[in-house]
Image (tube, rainbow, N blue to C red; front, side):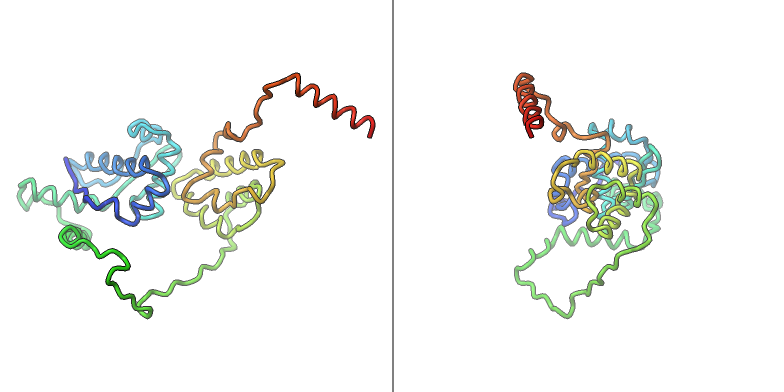
Length: 268
């Protein structure tokens, strides 16, 4: 497939707006590059997913593998793509590209018999809906829209799950702040769809080392550490340079301070 429709209002889509907010323009661009790679592979088949080593994905997109995992994890959690990490192999797919391939075949002048029969009943409906959106842009929220309180869907309160996995328990025991275990568990379940649990456990150990001697109130909650911003990625390979003790710039001054402390201890 040599092209697929990119709506000029794509950046206004709620999920893509959240992607820009969480991962910046680099994450937004990475998402579209992934779609381009998958669509190019669909030239002679209907395969909507590609499996490659994570290092290969990183090389093709020209960015760090941790950022690839961060963006694909967020996109998967929000239903923009499908992804699965198995060992060092990352599978990324987007079933919605099928409807755009059908449109490509129609507009490229191929015969109807050459067009793949749609196996998903909602694909044609989605295509028509996209066309309607182009002709009739949605009314901005709050302008002439009357919301009926009775029509709003009722949201069910989530109950904390007590059955935590062994890997999560290892993470929790290593993490330096034991607050909000249920919320952290929900974030953990979202992350392990695309991330190796051992990496998050290792990140927790390194973060605990980085927080030694620091006030607990400034330590991230585990749910924030594992959340969509993927703060844990900064600690997978160790403690970031910004949080390591700074080397002394004046050894003589340090020696004087050390002597003063020793004299205080002797006289105390």
